[in-house]
Image (cartoon, rainbow, N blue to C red):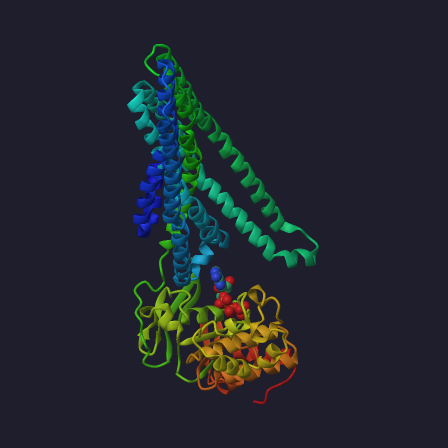
Length: 583
Ligand SMILES: Nc1ncnc2c1ncn2[C@@H]1O[C@H](COP(=O)(O)OP(=O)(O)OP(=O)(O)O)[C@@H](O)[C@H]1O
């Protein structure tokens, strides 16, 4: 339990001063809660003594007692307030910083990380697990420190007035600590399983929601609802099992404290009957016997929660320690924008996808990459942007191996337009300005005009302030494409990687997208996964990829003259587009 607490304090290291000062206030606030009862007992004792002596009760005693009670209540309020001000926001402040940091970590890990770790795992880490720490971390530290502080404060009074009652209290707390240790151990053992079940639940919920359109269109519930149901049942069963395992320790913890309360009442009654304690102090002890353990009782929940927090911290540490792809990268400005692949091989996991790839893309030229589905075209583009690192060989930009760049300094030079456009749930303005947050309104509108999307944006009721749905769900495929082109245009990077849309876009949209692409690529180094014959024909260089290697390389004319994959490919494209090109 204390080990977990130390971890939380380390987590909030930046705010350690506030945390400790808050604990000091917490201790004195606990001490001040005992003062009214003690003052009342003292006054009652004096009053009873005066009554038996036949004297009148001095009014000054009543007033002094009253002022002490009012003063200690006010002091308690002030100290509790100061503790709350100092401690309660710490969790939120640390978690907010950590969330940004985790976002940065995820931006810098290789994309392979997301294949090895499920979205559910990562999502649970940055949301649920971090929230557990954020909402509960400081509270648990307070419950444990405050719980013990309150106990020690009242124990000091006991030591002063009845050492026997103090001994019984310590024995009661010692027994309850054994039970708390059991709760901690049980929680440590089960927390990882509980978190895994929560991650599975998130993962299957994401999968189910993502696949809903398919589920509806096929009128089937399918495997996704099955795994959602299974994850739900597993989570319920694990929660019930954990609660059942925790109940005996919890009962033992509460039982030892209740037994100690009864022991205090008995010993004080015995001392009163023997004339060793006054009636007033006996009443005070009866009251204290109920409150002394009140704060220690709450520690059982904290002990259980600390196990969960520990497991959440393990998960967050694993996320934070993920290796950056650009760990040793430097901010480099390339000497030119020539891109060269030298003996490049690469595979996802163990399966090699690219073998000994060699080619050069000279600056300010257009290279079309063609080849059958699954041949490795997108993988080539991902390697240029360093979404993954090559397994063998090297890729250079200018004269420099791209592994020497930081991701930011490399990607500053590259704009990418994907077939599957992702737009953020934000305004159209912010989506266009995503890669260039400092761009002016005029520059943003100019890019939108060049990308042929200004007119349809202005026709929307809120224009550029229109908030689009997650992933761009409230726009058509063609509109999303053009916004992504405007985004790339505004970035104005010297290298453009383009995955040409093959989706069945209507002729009007295709025409607009082609116009937008021509504006985007003017005077740049272009690498395009090309499907349209016009693009292929006009490229300065065509790379034909098949089975993960470059099988042909040259201009359209040169390749058409050769027998091979390219001729086949062109034949199929001609049939698809319904026209023949002139040789
Ligand atoms: N993230 C990934 N993890 C594992 N394997 C992958 C991953 N992405 C692609 N692959 C595999 O790598 C091979 C090449 O894929 P790639 O997407 O580069 O082909 P492509 O030529 O672009 O295909 P298409 O024209 O259909 O988009 C395929 O066999 C594919 O299954």
